[in-house]
Amino acid sequence: MKGAFLYGPMDLRLLEVEKPVPGEGEVLVRVKAVGVCGTDIHYYLKGRTAVFVPKHPFILGHEFSGVVEESRGGGFRSGERVVIEPQIPCFKCYYCRRGRYNLCSSLKFIGTAATYPHINGAFAEYCKVPVEVLHRIPDDLGFEEAALAEPLSVAIHACRRASIGPGEKILILGAGPIGLLTLIMAQLTGAVEPLIVDNVERRLDWAKEFGGHPINFDIQDVFEEVMEATGGEGVDVVLEASGSPKAVSTALKCVRKGGRIVLIGNLPDEDIPSRLLNIVIKELDVKGIMRYANTFEVAIKLLSKKMIPSSKIITHTFSLEEIHKAFEVAINGQALKAIVKP
Ligand SMILES: [Zn+2]
Ligand SMILES: [Zn+2]
Image (cartoon, rainbow, N blue to C red; front, side, top):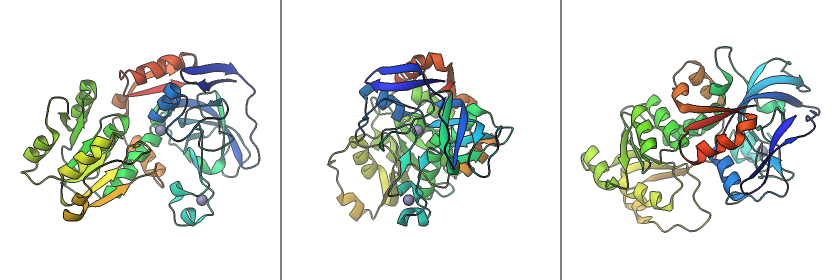
């Protein structure tokens, strides 16, 4: 089979390798669609992420759907259409037993260098996965749309942790794919015209198209815009999806008293100076989110009921041979979500 291996920074090689052989409890998936994620881009550009340094070449790609080719695990037959939840928990530890399996003490992740040996991902014709991570998809849901279940899961988890109520005022920092999916999800949970901040015009245009009130921080004062839109009170909830240390300060400033802040973005691995006194005097709830848990069934339902504008989110599709092009449009910001179809 063909697979795209990461060898180092900007060094992605499409190689012909042996088809993986599923072991007991595993399933071989014929990959049909894989999304290019921010994490993939990080690995591609830097050859690593902030915390994970690859020890050997491996196949990237973790937002994917496909067809069961061969099953050595119970419950699934060959030919079934599936989407894969790329985190592999142990199902035994303290966190797993409490349903918070995204925090699993020995979590593995498909298509990253998080654990050694690294688990090959889905920019390939085939990928083998444990049966527990499969979710069936309905006939009316296309493979490309189904691949959105993973990034959409992040938005669902963030909105759940934010406990958004009907009519609440929301500020989203960052209008990348996760920020935009969070914008859509926040409205499904009751937010009206959330404010959304970025400095890339194309992203802000998408934000407007998806129902948001765009703010360009290069030419507008975010705090003033927020105060104007909220009668000087600040927003009920800030969802931080940019990963920028400055955005944390913006969140602490723009949230109202008694409000909530949810940090979604991957902040740099360092101390970040911020006026934490605001948490005390405004009596804020500040939460982080680490991926997601118990979200895939909901994501699949929302996607198949067309409650997510998938056709507008998926802006580009490519063959596996064109994988470098897929990364290019994702990096230069032309694509909202680029999908590779091996
Ligand atoms: Zn992802
Ligand atoms: Zn566990």
